[in-house]
Each structure stands twice: as C-alpha cells, then as structure tokens.
Picture 1: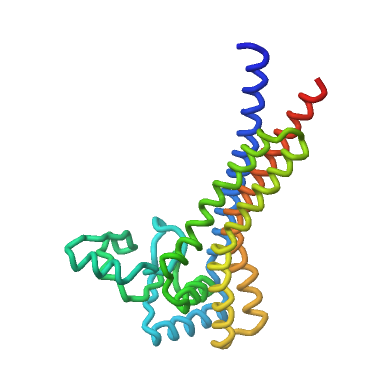
Picture 2: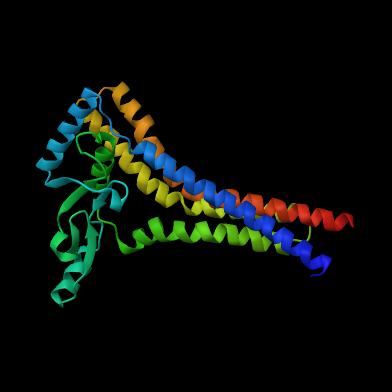
Length: 262
C-alpha cells in the first residue's frame, strides 16, 4: 500500500471513528435518560396521585395495564389508522401486533384506548400522565405521522450525509466546517416535529396532575426527575447525528488544512 493510500485510509478511519463515537455516545445517553425517566415514584403522595389518574382514565374508557420488559418503555396503543385496519380485517387479512399479552389481531384492539406501562401503574405516575396526554390528541393522519416520525428519521441520516459529502467537496477548510454546521441543523430542525409530539403530552400530563390535586412542587419534581429525562432521550436522537456532522466536518477541514501546507 502506497503512503497516499495509507493516509486516505487513516483519515477515513478517523472520520468513521468520530462519527461512531458520537452516535454510540448518543445511544448510551438515550438509554440512560430513558431509564432515569422510567424510575418508579414510590412516595405516598405520588402513589395517591397515580391512583387518582388511573381512576380518571378508567372513567374516560382508558385501560391501564402493566407491560413487560420485552416491549421497552411505556407506550400508548393503538396509534393506528383505524379505518385501514378495519378495512383490511374485513377482507380477511390477519394483521397482528406484538402486545404484552402476546400477538393479537389489530382489529381486536382497534378502537380501544390502552396504556401499557413498563412498570407498575401504581408507581409510574409521570409516565401515566404522559401517555394520557397522548390520548387527548386527535388521531394522527398519515401525513402528520410522516412529518412526526418519518421526517426525523430521514433528517437524522441526511444531516451527517450532507456534512460528510459537503465537507469532502468543499475547496477550503472553512467551507468544510460550514457543511458540518448545515448538516447539524438538518438533523436538529428535522427532528423538531418528533420532539414536539413528545413534549406536548408531557405538558398536558403535568396539567392533568395539577387538576387531580398535585401541588406545584410535586408536578415540578416529577416533571424534572421523570418527564424531562424521558424527553431528553428523544433529544439525543437528534443531538447525536448533529454532533457527528460537526465532528466529521472538522476532521475533514483539518485534513484540508494539512494538505494546503504541503
């Protein structure tokens, strides 16, 4: 292998290493924040509040169930296209989904508002309030689903790709660094709909906690110790590719500076 090829390989490995470190660090941080947000709240006042929220949910026709570790974090089901599911089911298609109770036909669950919590519903008051905030939203249209979930995923891939290709194509180091900043903005701005989709239910959940007797201090404590870390886990989905974009472009800019000095 020639010296030129060795240099190219070394630089490529450096760029991949920086990108991998940013993405890996983002994944670890997201898991850590998710675990922090999923901690049970065992204070008597929190359990009393959870009891009030469960009673309010049941009066509204919402089923509260305990999930299992295999399905990950707390979530609301169903957020599906009800008409599409029913039409497919009427034509004989067996649409199945994995639930804590095993694989079940979607048509069987359609129309029911079910909240499955990762842990004990009696001890997960903040998560329950958050998922109830989701339920209060209008059903998501296909276009809104694409904006909320599809666009963020695409932007998180497009940002680093733009940063790398733009920096490589740039004629000078400053333009290479600029490509990284633009790539970071693509990832961050594109993820905004997802962050809004998760932040709004938390805001509604905190209002619900106040409406059911929680003090401002209790709401602030649960918001800061549970809901904020959970939102932070989604933020890391955007922050990691943004950081990768910046690091890659800066590395490429350094390489271009070295080449200029030769």
